[in-house]
Length: 278
Image: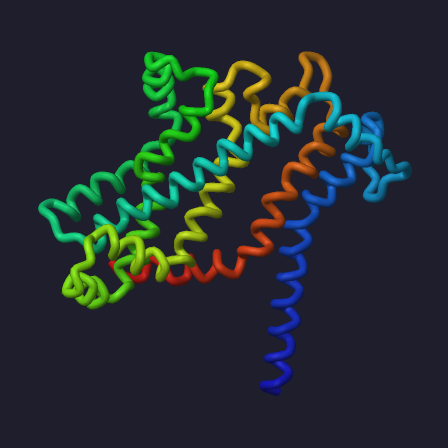
């Protein structure tokens, strides 16, 4: 009887997992399916699950209609420098808030942490006015520079929680041997925090790579467009090339899928090992 109940529970769990997987993967399937059919077939009613005719030329047309190679390069520059800046500066801030003893350290950290309650829309106009006064509109600097000044409040919080779990005896032993604070940070804390640093890098990459609002605000010339802004070119005033947009989108999401598939183990471990002490 007990074994029978256990089997029923297990079957029910598998059914829920299969249903959840279907709900998660179906949008990806619909995107790929829409990228392989004609524009008229997208609006066909009732919609068909399988395409009647495959148009592989949609991918060639979509990528050649606009300079997506330039958009890809722009996105790589912005995302790469943003991830690098976020990992370096947020880890430095987290080290100062977790490993160093100084006056009002925790109070200042809580004050910075309150910045999580401010949405981007609140600071959007002041930031734009500031960068405009500096003459940096239509450049990559407003998109990259913020990551080099703290790396984000959430990243600082995540790394601080992880650093608090590293025994402080390691710092004391290194100080006895004459190591500076920077050497402790670079040669002891950073190598022991690879999992958390990978999480910060992944989260920053996803936000920067998929960001649409900030590039739309700061970038005006087409040669500086990112991939997200490039997709918007398929939307006209009176019509939209949805099949070409889906074809370009299918290619754009490939780097994110590859990175997540190879780093998901580190991502899960980094999240589970953070936030338990503080």
